[in-house]
Length: 179
Image (cartoon, rainbow, N blue to C red; front, side):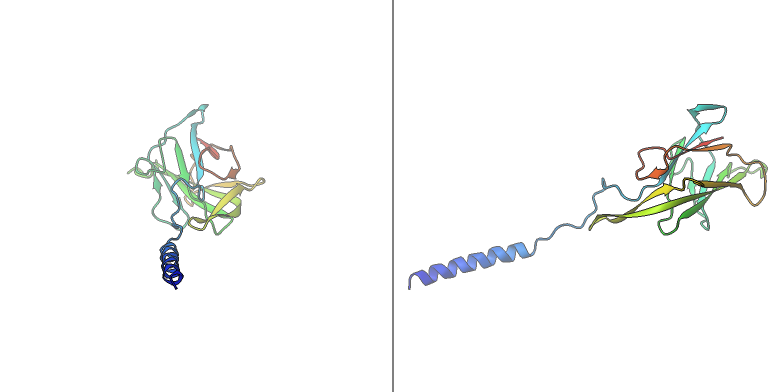
């Protein structure tokens, strides 16, 4: 009979240990260093000297149907010669309005070009905490369509070069715009 009280203590100890582990579960927090859906990285260059990055000021970039946009000199997504803009994850094309001199009081200086980016999407599972991300590949035949705004004036974007059609991270330039 002396064995029975000792057994009770072991069973109680195992029960307490099991109970303590039942409250533990993996944290479902997505690490900030985890690569998620990348944005399209565009660098701006001087059309007269194509090897020189060109700082852009007074540029507003807005998505189709959106009034607020990415504005140079007021957004962390932009430095003087580079911008990162999001593409749609639920469509195979995204259209943006690039408005140069958008703050000018002289309407003749405001110049709007429209860029429609065409791509294929690939959805990838990242983790339970982070969910899915979407990578993009620009269409090899027509990666973009460049048009003038509804009020036709001379396009301010002179030339566009696709540097990397695979948009899987934000560590490199995908497009170069010359103006």
